[in-house]
Amino acid sequence: MSLVARHLEADGLPTVIMGCAKDIVEHCGVPRFLFSDFPLGNSAGRPHDPDSQALTLELALRVLESAPAARTTVQSPLRWSDDAAWKLDFNNLAKLTPEDIAERRREFESVKATIKDMPGRK
Amino acid sequence: MAFVAEHDVPIPYMQRTRDYYQALGFPAYRWAHFAEVPFTPLVKPLAEARVALITTAAPYQPGVGDQGPGAKYNAAAKFYKVYSDTTESLPDLRISHVGYDRKHTTADDPRTWFPLARLHACVKAGRIGALTPRFHGAPTNRSQRVTLETDAPELLRRCRDDGADVAVLVPS
Image 1: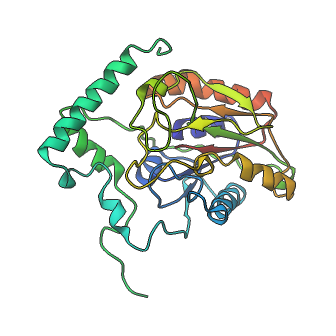
Image 2 (image 1 turned 60 degrees about the vertical axis):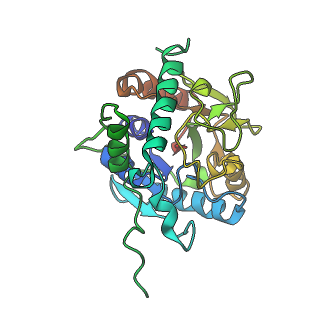
């Protein structure tokens, strides 16, 4: 999505990305980024929380209209949880047993095989 | 104000992913990385602007397995071409085809990855001028070449055809 934002912007179309993967988006380099420090999958706010979703979009719109230059990141003040332990879980080897890793390797092989066989794939 | 825990920082996804795939025995992914970043200032206030919405969520496809909340990573539900659909009604979009955080999010509220209803509310409130008649779907292709040479130009063309003044991009 970062590559798409850059392409649109280079042609004169202003963009803002709403996302949760701060390092990946900033590593690519995008014009404007509203970062929510939430688990991946919640770029537009907290589930079943209309106020959170409204604030997240409003912040993105403010970033869109007020960023002074490229690589503007604003971090939403919203917290996913008072306890940040969730941040230690995602794909964290330190929390996986050898059996977990073997299982995930099998799953990934299966995913790769599925993708390879898909008709729509270029 | 009290200090928070050392690990209470944005998750270092790149390092985690590198370590993870190395342990699984797969080659490292190289993320796109540029020195220069384009920037286009807004030429009109948002209250007069037509907004395009771009998502990585996938239309629900019957017959390709579980795409519901908490479904395992479902590669069969991926899509490989840019798609567009009307912004007049709410589509049935899912995220089972991407690597979202399956432990800490339920994926049972599409508004957390597709803010179309909120954007309609913003039009009604006068916060933005209008929505484009269509939203657009960007493939989550791991080929950066296809993204750069095919998908991004196609998304740009569709945004232009729709008269978009600005775009809101929401990766899931």
